[in-house]
Image (cartoon, rainbow, N blue to C red):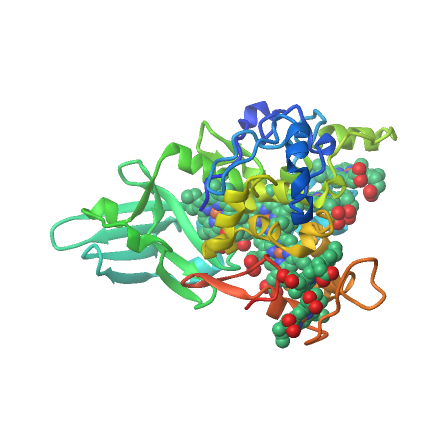
Length: 397
Ligand code: HEC
Ligand code: HEC
Ligand code: HEC
Ligand code: HEC
Ligand code: HEC
Ligand code: HEC
Ligand code: HEC
């Protein structure tokens, strides 16, 4: 995981923003693009760049994340959006964003694979994952001499790729389970990165110990509301729901109910340029570097692992650069649904530019007229059990 996580407010201060206030709202930001042909203008862009647009290195933390929205409001909870936006609500509720965090004991794939046990050659301990009499997910590690255990209450990941439970050891520390359920194999295996650790005792054999800050970061990217005092998501808002992207919605609802103007009551990311949208989604999907950070851009090109971060890869594409960032995440994605429901529409998104008679830009492919992404956005095996589509759209040679 990268550590570009956003900061967040306590649920007791619900009007505060997840993304710490930045006076330069995205809507007023200087339009930006990575156009190679515009590199001569970079100095000028740099001079014009608003404070708070400061670049972050590709592995850097987003120190001053853009505030998506400028309105002030209390949070209402996604349920409150249902009555007026029923279609979006039902689609989004079933999406992997919404299911990205759940109570572990309620996750069918995970619970269905229990009990499970595996000897860990690296540590010399046997790991056992089970569901205890109170239906909570338990992880035990043992060798002949000693044993240790943890109760894993939170399941991260919808299951589109994997589900990793996290929780507390019997001594009270946070731990990320050394075992993960993977969709591609339909079974439990070692968590990605586990082999990098060399556990020295039973407790370390349970998994990677997490600091309070890391736990905050995990919940920060996988929930809408999170209570730092109890180290738990607020019950009604597990997963990534409406107000995580649109900002707090109470004032919007009240205005709608009163028949008042809705202007400025809720944030709609469709108003963002492609670059600002890449940054917004990139607050979780990998923050792209600034236009003039050529070192960071070159590093991204050389780092295969960056395929995991679509916002960082897309800015390398000519489709993005040579349309002055007209290409946005929402050109191809409906953020309220999963990619599996969009398979039929991706070609259409490409052909909007790359077809005879398409607008002013766009060469037509000499090789094929369908399944564009299969060749130009190939799926790469970034981790042993997970494929990611390379958003650096190009002729891959
Ligand atoms: C009482 C009805 C009502 C409720 C409840 C409601 N909205 Fe809306 N919303 C509207 C209306 C009316 C519009 C304007 C027409 C449209 O786009 O559907 C709107 C528009 C929007 C827009 C587009 C705004 C724009 O500037 O383009 C967003 C985003 C939005 N709502 C999000 C939400 C979210 C998130 C919630 C829950 C926190 C919510 N709404 C709850 C009535 C409501
Ligand atoms: C708060 C963090 C966060 C933000 C903001 C965010 N995402 Fe995500 N996104 C995630 C997480 C976490 C997942 C993985 C969900 C899972 O499968 O568990 C995900 C998954 C996805 C997927 C894959 C869904 C599938 O089919 O499995 C797409 C596509 C996506 N996000 C697009 C976007 C776009 C576009 C935006 C901006 C409009 C965005 N995301 C903003 C965290 C975020
Ligand atoms: C910067 C935001 C961010 C942070 C911090 C973060 N995640 Fe994620 N997580 C994502 C996004 C985005 C995805 C979907 C794309 C991907 O897998 O990279 C995801 C996917 C996942 C998945 C699904 C499996 C997979 O590989 O797609 C698991 C499990 C997961 N995260 C667990 C965690 C845990 C545990 C932590 C804390 C140690 C954590 N995440 C911290 C953003 C974040
Ligand atoms: C991952 C971020 C994300 C989440 C979560 C999210 N939205 Fe959106 N929403 C967007 C983006 C981005 C757009 C702009 C879509 C576009 O330009 O095509 C949008 C557009 C909208 C609109 C404007 C109408 C439209 O179709 O363009 C409404 C209304 C809306 N969202 C309501 C909701 C509600 C209600 C929820 C929760 C059930 C929700 N959104 C969850 C990112 C999100
Ligand atoms: C907003 C318009 C737009 C969209 C949408 C778009 N492209 Fe492009 N793309 C361009 C432009 C402009 C260029 C630059 C040269 C040209 O005209 O082909 C380009 C270049 C390319 C190139 C050549 C890259 C190189 O390195 O030489 C490929 C391949 C490509 N696009 C494939 C795709 C595919 C596949 C999709 C859909 C997944 C797509 N494009 C979507 C505008 C777009
Ligand atoms: C030109 C079209 C296009 C654009 C623009 C685009 N995507 Fe994608 N995206 C795709 C395709 C195609 C897939 C693979 C779908 C599949 O698996 O069938 C995908 C998959 C994903 C996934 C699922 C994980 C993976 O790698 O398979 C995430 C997350 C995602 N996109 C996020 C984003 C974000 C964030 C942006 C904006 C920075 C974005 N996408 C812009 C076409 C696009
Ligand atoms: C079977 C793999 C494959 C598929 C499918 C495919 N392409 Fe290509 N495409 C290529 C190859 C290979 C080239 C490079 C051809 C060359 O340089 O002679 C290319 C070149 C391109 C170019 C650059 C043309 C130029 O002259 O610079 C664009 C744009 C493009 N493809 C878009 C698309 C779009 C849009 C689709 C879907 C309608 C698509 N491709 C489907 C393999 C494919």
